[in-house]
Length: 170
Image (cartoon, rainbow, N blue to C red; front, side):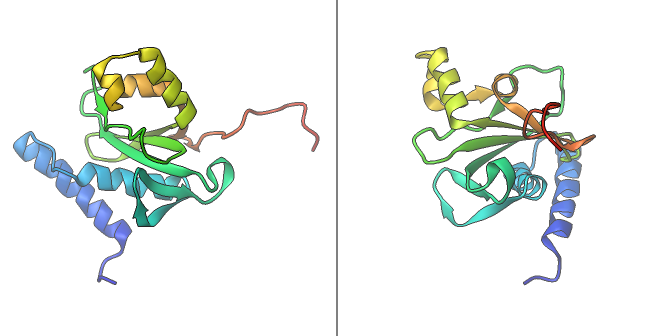
């Protein structure tokens, strides 16, 4: 075990990556994915796959995600007005149940997390037909947000996993 906690190291990685982008105009390669994975695991009560499983980054520990294999994607949004932001390739040929997309601001702070099931994503890709992007598992952030469900926000924390029922006993 190192001298620093993982949380402290991630905090420093956020700061360094944001400073690097401001200084160079380029993102610090690989850092946003690690931060997105760390945040998704912490905020959605997931457990990192250890040893790694192809196509799966984490396993749900509780609630609706319990036992589900989760693929985690991260995207830093520097300019909300720019369209065409894409998420990493969805590995449809590998075994997973859910994909979560962690959206981060220019300081690499998570502000929203969206989730979609394999079935929802497969259906959307089938509807997209034979486009080269659909065949590769490529998708825009905007499309994922339409297909998926908002599960966490910086303002509210975890969003409701299930629909509220005002008829329930209790």
